[in-house]
Length: 333
Image (cartoon, rainbow, N blue to C red; front, side):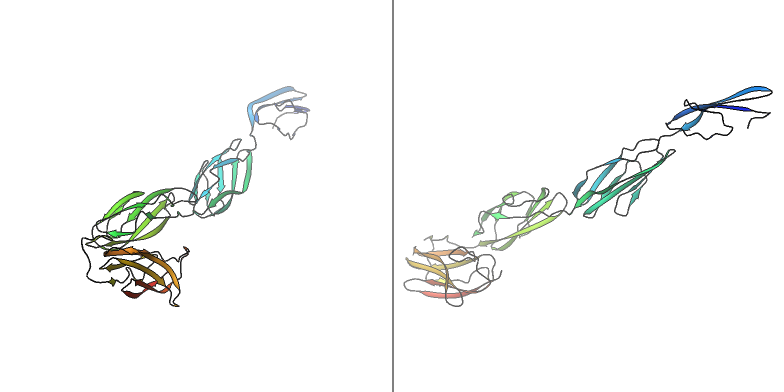
């Protein structure tokens, strides 16, 4: 834009490079701020114009980021940290699940189990750059806990105190159990992992143990507790029955166990056996000499070898020197 008759031009681009062209094109290789001067000359003399810090060259941005964590159970919260270089004025994140963000350091929650590819594009005066990390975030489904309830006894006479334990077999395959809940089957509950409870009324009580893991998933296990009424403990002579009698098993149908009560009025050899409907012996529950009294024996639904038998109708029999009686019971697996 110089005026007058000009026959020479001398450009100084401020980076050590010069030109004598009238309208040169110059490429700046390094980011910086440059002072440019132009000296023109002609028949009328010479003149110089200097523009201080007139050219600003920005570095090209370099996209980079780091997420934490990169794997875990759903829902997984991931914090993304921008590590990009250069002058940056905008960020565009693609989290790989259909959602985006324009924050510099966003936090994103993945709700579905999958493997996700994450991309970041950064822009600034020096241009733009992108980085994509393929299959970089792995989100797994939470595996629920496994509840296992145990008790030191499953039947007895009231008042019946039972010690319950959830720690012996309850596990969580990919985390930890954070909550226990016992429902004793009579309206009372406990949140202790190991607890004792006393039944003061008779009946068959379904005890439910529920465990909860650190992701809120639950699992349950059940026990059956039989609280019985009897004026006489097994073999107690303070009350002597006046006749032989085999009672109906309790509960019936049953799973996994049932109780068989009987009474004998005299001292005698007693056999209690279980048969299938073909007449084949399954297991012997009692084979001993007993004093007169009231007795209860429990069958756990297993044969003489400790194997669980299948669902069906079974016959149980009491045999003494002077008395034989049989009854039917039903096992439902």
